[in-house]
Length: 379
Image (cartoon, rainbow, N blue to C red; front, side, top):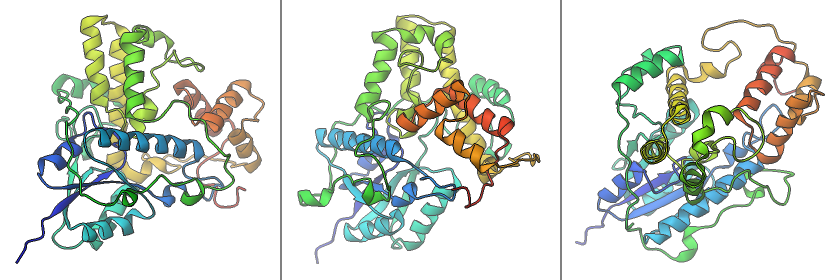
């Protein structure tokens, strides 16, 4: 009797890169044939009660660029990427059965919506298949920080000082040389969907992303901002500007979809300090990575409370929730030039500077007195 060999499924989500991708390395180390998969799930683009999509056309276009770049990079090492559109809850268990996978390699999730999805998938998996999760979202590894999640400090300073003094950043994982995928007909690998196919409606024929998507472009941007132009040297003093490509790093879009890992940026900054200059700017960029870590871990501690109007401290505040004012804010027609310019930039490009985000959100809450509980009657 011929034994059927088991394969493994490699589920890409917000880790769309080859360099410093431990999940990819672990899948390869299994020694089995791999089915790399990315799923465009229409639930991520569904209309919210507030009257607009959870994820809009610019972000969708950026994701498409990132996924296609990932496919190209996987093909360059002998692999490929299956691109599907639909519910991960239905597709993943079906793929596991069809391709006889005994392990799903995936980056570890930490927020409620994603964790609930994972649990539903687990419920539908065949009994001999398991998840193998890898932590890859933060600069400092979850297992290395000097806090249990339930005891993450309430202030970023308390977290930062203790963590940076007592924790080392783990080394990056190199880009693998070869990927051995399951063999199949070319058409089975799929294609990226259209905006209509993921449920987006009334979108323009194209969406212009603020920066081009993908790991290849992310690594180019990292090199450009550091060694090619040495703009990193001035980051401390320019980072709070609002317009242009040179004042800040623009790494955040790439980090959001995992085209760049925080450790990759850290590695580059440390090399820059040795070869070019170490100053307040290099310290500050790493500070921002630690700040990002802190809010990831804080979200893990408080989960959905951070999205509630009263927050995790249960503070009460009176809001008028004037829907007319809310529409003005969304469209950038408040009459306040600084607010309107940033909101229009966000609407057109999907990007807004850090200083813009701080001021626009503060204006919405403290000047327009708009809270979160606007219900379904806004539009």
